[in-house]
Length: 199
Picture 1 (spheres, rainbow, N blue to C red):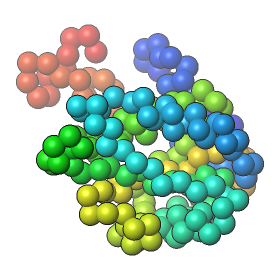
Picture 2 (picture 1 turned 90 degrees about the vertical axis):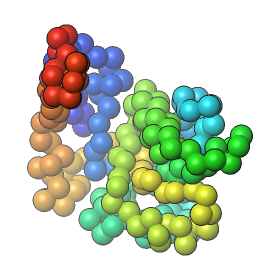
Picture 3 (picture 1 turned 180 degrees about the horizontal axis):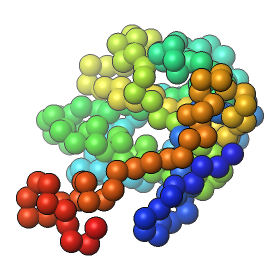
């Protein structure tokens, strides 16, 4: 299934086709495709080129580590994410590598790396669902994540599946039209709340 964005302005197809389904196919993702996703993340931009991201990833054929990742998700996400063939955690490393000082942009940069990964996934006909619904403390304890690193999101990766395989209460959300706020509500000029003239 596809659920393309309804654009007000022309977009690259990778952006308009990107979406976050909950319905996954159980088919395993090929290893070379997984490598391509993280290669894309590797080439994301970052402050001082510090590359403060890290990922903890498990595929469904690695049953022990997959279950450990699944156990970090909130129950509402486990319902659908347990079908996804790949689960992961996005980690931000809190301090700059070159001087050890706090990196205020680490989470921003980890988000950029993940967004780049997601676009590469879209190019490969894969889908990624990013989640805030996970237990960071449990993730830290389960995977021995050091104090210098912070789990900021969980991700599910795979091929899109059939909406009909989801619980009934999630099916309507899956097929609902996608919506976004208008540009005028967040692209400002002069001062906060004054819409830029080109929007």
